[in-house]
Amino acid sequence: MDFAMQILERNGMTSDLASHIVEEKEKHYISHHSFELYLGVNELIDVLKENGYLLGVVSAGSGKRLLNSEISSNLLESFDVKITGDMVAQGKPAPEPYLKAAEFLKVLPKMQKIVH
Image (cartoon, rainbow, N blue to C red; front, side, top):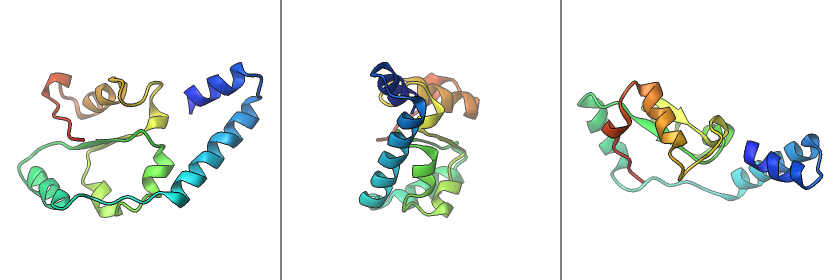
């Protein structure tokens, strides 16, 4: 959201208007996009957790979007950290959200395995 705010403010829009535009975009996205897991993802997550892996999810979307998505709350609870676009200045594909996840998980970034 910070990036969107900067662009809008640079073009003479107030921060209130910029916030309103970003909120409307989020509402539109949530109501017009669905999310489906690939076959076997739930089982893979279970196996990884059973074997002691720390898991994180990095999303370009907002925390609100992630929580309001069709992903079950049980699945989200499987992740040890959730990093969303509104938690970082530079979202994916920049390294910042992945580095933040490593920091929260207390692991070295080079130890991360990223699955898209």
